[in-house]
Amino acid sequence: MLNRSIAACFAAASLVALPVQASEVEVLHWWTSGGEAKSVASLKSSLQKRGVSWQDFAVAGGGGENAMTVLKSRAVSGNPPTAAQIKGPDIQEWGELGFLASIDDVAKKNNWDGVLPGVVSDVMKYQGKYVAAPVNVHRVNWLWANPEVFRKAGASIPTTWADFMVQAKKIQDAGYIALAHGGQAWQDNTVFEAVVLGVGGAEYYKKAFVELDMKALNSSTTDEVFKVFGELRQFIDANAPGRDWNVATSMVINGEAAMQIMGDWAKGEFAVAGKNAGTDFVCVAAPGTSDGFTFNVDSFAFFQQSDVNKQSAQKAMAEEILGTNFQEVFNLNKGSIPARLGMARAKFDTCAHDSMNAFVSTAQSGGLVPSFAHGMAVPGAVAGAITDVATNYFNSDTSPADGKAQLVAAIQAAM
Ligand code: GAL
Image (tube, rainbow, N blue to C red):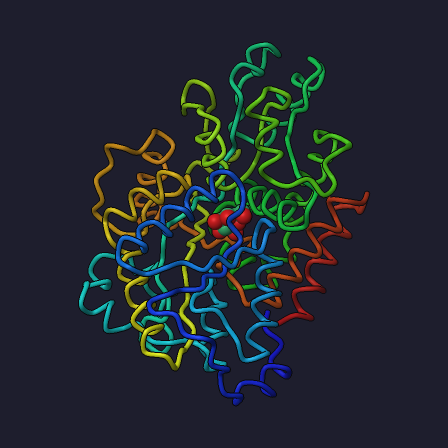
């Protein structure tokens, strides 16, 4: 995702010193929806209790593409924030460019290797040292449903893609929007990812979309994936283009639409609206994915600072993030589950319990896979190529065979 040639020009540039305020962190993130903002507020207030003040650097835009663009320009000008929401393989790229600060002493002191699952801690390290702290684990392959709309339409919640088409038609015939969707590239790709896992299964998903195995990508499974993905076009409404994901969630909340396929940050919106899991809304694995788990870990990476006050503020932030109290409060608001192992479950709802159980069982079965739609699976250039193909396909009448050919060509060009 980072442009290495530009990066080379500025990597050597020294950081510009900012006016210093004792113990302050400036934090870049993209959490601006109702549930997201509540989650950020909990981080801000936990830090304030430690005497660390918070300078908010929010860049709106679901999925974080806008935020990453702004981060790059701040870094290029030698003025990166204290910490930024950076995920997955991008952490390595920023590490390679020499921007990130080690917080390994905090990690050692607090036994992060012992309290984090390996699949999470591996991503937080650059050259064996922690440079980022994980706040959560999101499961992306969810379907959110309004049970009242299903009742009124005489439909049942689908567990396979074939059944999805049948039930969605019933909902549409009853006068509701079957699938609430926001026509933005990352949302198209989020739905595409659910179809990939549901149609192809975890082995195909890993071969094709993590290992980028050309045989798997060229297989007939990919034709089937595009066929099913294309069939979903008929179930979204004409106003979808450009719609934010949380607006799509609100359509399910208020009964205008029956379903949304979205990661469990959507649950944060149901929570803010005062809705309860199991009664007001239902969460089930996206069709065909009940034995799979596409994981998406949000984390904050720390940028090198010359000022010692800022360095100690970073360490306080890192320590706070992995604290049990913060992990609980933050994740109750965010819809995700704690990144930290061994947390008490009592305050979490049934969706979170399902996610916690599935995280453990899929780690054993092989169904636990990194989300390519949320920057966890492949380098940025490849992730961008997949997003482009998915969104172009979904917003045209491209045939499955052409979709597959475009995917293969785009991935090959980006590798
Ligand atoms: C994801 C991120 C989530 C959520 C979502 C929508 O990429 O991991 O925390 O914020 O975007 O903005």
